[in-house]
Image (tube, rainbow, N blue to C red; front, side, top):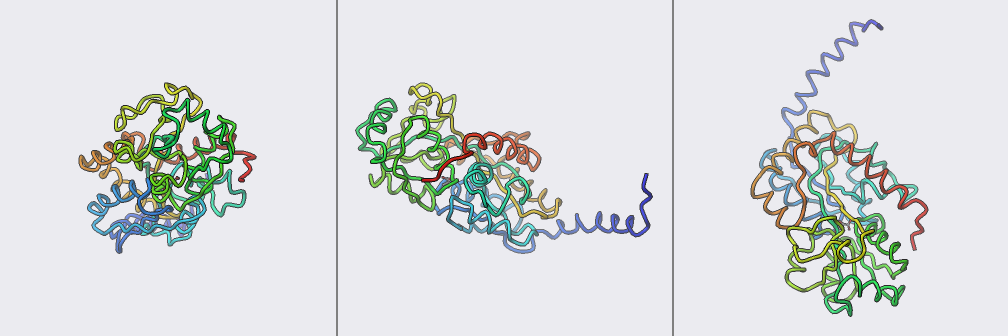
Length: 324
Ligand code: MLT
């Protein structure tokens, strides 16, 4: 076995002391949570709910910074390039940290190499929703309408690589349709357009939709999960509605720039864990239809495994996708 030189042992000893010390006085400043979509959308909603509680645990404000564009990749790049001291994190998701590399061949980051994983915040089932006055009372009638309209139908999304883009790409490939795509900086503004009947439909995460579906300002045709969503028990599953191939669940998770010290990442992961155990936080997330990860689904290792499996899932689906 290679003998360690005295200086190597000394360096290891110093590192062993410095690392926890770096965490001891972390955070020294406010923490910026980059949300790579516009305010009011699902990523922003989840980020603000968990960030508010994390700031109590960490003792410094967690400030949301909405950095929009390019399906969430602009904000993700901003976070990746930030100082890796733990004071900048990003609320990524299935789009930015799993699907995007297969839609942007020259993407400036690799989700599984250029970030430290902190932890999964919420699972977010995806629904097919339409403007309230669309001439289709259910998914079966919508399918007929969408096929008839084809490129005359307007589909909203939050940019190439976003969850709304990616999951509706799946829907359109099942239907064999090529709708006109209307991009927004997030499904917050996209939802406003849908409520105003300026677009016809979109695929969006449940946390953005519950009040609008229950309030009747939009129509929900199906949820892309095997079971109905407890927050929207009257919305059928895609299988019940006659389109079993549309299975679409997204997730929101926190990441830090590569090289953020492990002791600091662990402190952030602990603050996220405490947020997800807080009864008030849990109620807000569950009332919005999200799934809260159990203990074994939380933390850096579980998120590293999720990113790997999700990239493997989306690669074959998205490979060779032409972005019209
Ligand atoms: C998306 O990927 O569609 C985003 O979640 C939309 C958003 O958060 O605004």
